[in-house]
Image (cartoon, rainbow, N blue to C red; front, side, top):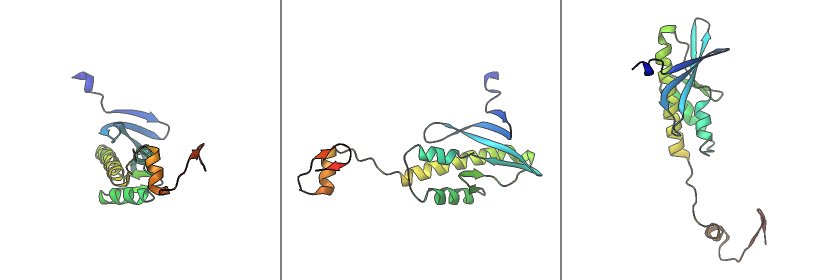
Length: 147
């Protein structure tokens, strides 16, 4: 199985490495984790993948950051400026930190999307309008003018 020997793969970047993990987001995209050298160790982050995944579903809950932060904290990570981060880790701890960050990003996306996603109203537009306009007779002219 030499075909699988190089998977997951890593891409070197100007500031570290991007690790392509086996972990999958709800959309089916794989989680890529960024490893960056730091003084006396390394930092591992999802590089904003969790927020990208959540926003791609249309979730616009004002509490998304709080949910993600709580989930990250429960697993010993932190959420800062839109990314999930590990604490500083040694070189020997990097592989485990990569796995942990990727899985927490996936789990946080799963949780937020499941709990915060608003159901799409699939009723015909005239039923939606009737539900909030009552029995009054309205017609719609263009995208926003009511008559």
